[in-house]
Every structure is written in structure tokens, then in C-alpha cells.
Image 1: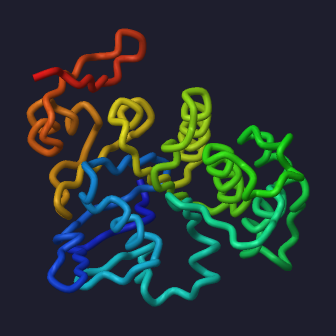
Image 2: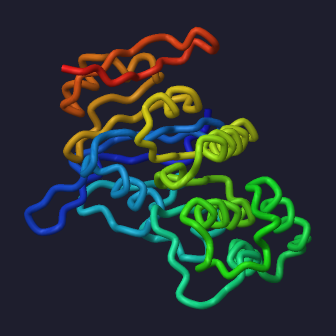
Image 3: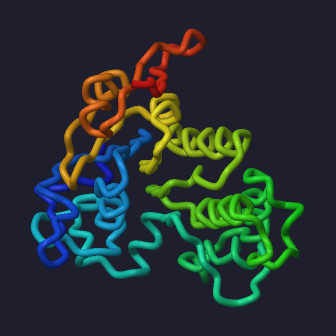
Length: 255
């Protein structure tokens, strides 16, 4: 399967702090990759390196074989869409206006923008919020509006940084089902998640980070062992098999 991204010995430092330490990784098209790890493990930093928002201190990040650091902003915007943890809007835009911002890289192209925007808003369950001021929404509603913007951008690579953090149970499931569907369409999807059971349920592969290093990468059942999770997270867990779909379930254990 073709690789969207190839990371070659990527490190990222700020002063004496090492946020990424010699990470090598491939992100293929047609798969959903979940990035997991404790707070400060380097997940968001790795997403920033993939997106081109930060430049690696050493190593290379290749998107379709081209060094991300040499790609123009418009070209990047047509290849990858990014949903950040915080989605701040400085002006009193409506929800629909925020969603429409996803179309910016495709201006002057022959696309039915109205239909694309409407479809994205329906898929993310925010059509009824179209005329509301974005700043008046709850955190979960803002997250869904920002995800709709990503869908409108319609890129072959989609990166989501903790997209379920502010969502209720129903919308967590729906967002990840959409992300799963994007991968099934042939896109490369990278999602930062804290819920290990959700990661196991929706991801083809899991990459576990700890202190800036990639400590495991592979099928969820291979990566999410009790010993590894307890070592990386410093918390005792039980890993059992979901009796319905066979995915690993990670359950905290009392000491």
C-alpha cells in the first residue's frame, strides 16, 4: 500500500527539551493510524511535524515523497487537513462561515461548494446550528463544526488531534465512524486519542509514544498489552477482548 507519509529519524527539540526523539514511521493511504501515549509523550508534536506546522530539528518528513518543509502552504492545504485541539475564532463568524473556510484551498476550482458544505454539516450534526455565532457554541459543538470544516477541505490526508475530547458518547462514535470511512475511501487518517479502547476499535494501526520516542507500532492487539501500557502510562490496567467485535478493551485496575 502506498505511503502518504514517511518519517525518517525525525527529532524535534526546543532548547534542551527533546519533544520527538529519532522517530521513523510510515503512514499509508487507506488506513487509520491512532497516535496514543500519556500527556507530554509527543503526540501533538508528531502531528505538527506531519502537517508541516513545525520543522524537524533533524530527520525528514516526506509527503508523497516530497519534503514537507519545502512545500508551499497552498499545496500542503490541498494535500492535508488538520483539526487542532483548540479551535479558536477571533471574529463573530457564524458556524456556516467557519465550515466554509475549509473550501479556501480550492477557490477558483469547479466545485459545488454549497452542496459540499451542506453535506459536511449534516454528517457532523450541526446543520441546525448554521446561523449561530461560532463563539456561542459549547466545546463539543465547536469541535463538530471544526471537523465539518476539515471535511469540506476534502484532502487525501486527514489529521485529527484529540477530536473526541469535548464530545459526548454518541458524537465520539459518529466522528470516529466518519474518520474510519475516510480511511476506507483510500485516504490516510491520523488521529490522536487518549481513549485506548476507542483507538483499538477504529484504528488499523496504533503508534504508542513515550517521552518523545516511538515505543511500539503495529496492530492494536500487538501494541496494547497490559505490560506495555502499565510501563508507559504508569497505571495498572486489564486488557480484555470485546465479546462483540473482538477488539481489545483497556480497563483501569485498582492497585
